[in-house]
Image 1: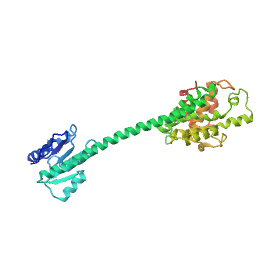
Image 2 (image 1 turned 120 degrees about the vertical axis):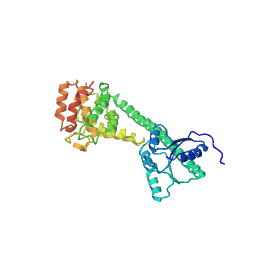
Image 3 (image 1 turned 90 degrees about the vertical axis):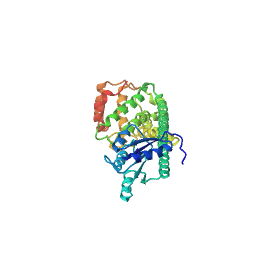
Image 4 (image 1 turned 180 degrees about the horizontal axis):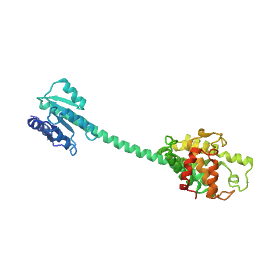
Length: 358
């Protein structure tokens, strides 16, 4: 006589339309210290699975309302119950029935008349495997949560780095105190609006919007290389001073590349580099530093170019006062197809009233 094991929290479901089989199997399972949930109907057992979650199901193959094969297929389609191991206990020794059982999702097949030791041995194996699988699943969920939290922390650190660099550029000119936050906010708004345009819906996605909101803050980082005597000059710049000023786009990109070389993979920096370098390129090829034309210009730079100019027109500068809304809108409209991507400008014209300019 095998000594009965201590009571556990494990529940075993037994489904068999023959009451004698239910009692025999139930006594074996109870001797293992487990709780028995027994049913003479497969349909009743399926209903009970909405409330009960057993660690193992012992299942007869031939039953009147729903046979064991259909029952097994049904629970394997449900995400809640698909991992519960099912052992068929059947009087059939037909190889086709065994094949059907395993194809339905069973983990084992025991023929009647069954032996007590065989039931105990196989039940122990599959209960243990199920418990290990559940623990592994829980571990993976915890690990995924930890990885997500760590990734979020890393992304926040990347953003913090870029915001700190943007503050350096912002401090160069007291007249442009709102320019960087305006460009950041407005670039996100314009990018979000482009998602609804058939032309850009495959290029502009949520992560793109998140990145451009951060990367756009560094569009003028290269201005830290320009002397204040030029940057804050109220008179017209000389040709030499214009060339020095234009050099800020390449200087900014080179500076950001040097930062990127010293840091881990950073998608924000990648976009920040292309924005810094190319946000003064014009749609018709008349811009700088490379004279890129049309879609040769990165999309991020085309977006920030429009927003940068729009905000600049609305603000006081050392060489002029802010322009009126009417004058700003006229200049922006004239630049469509020349300075600015005309397709983006179609969207810009519809949402410009939502943009910050103060």
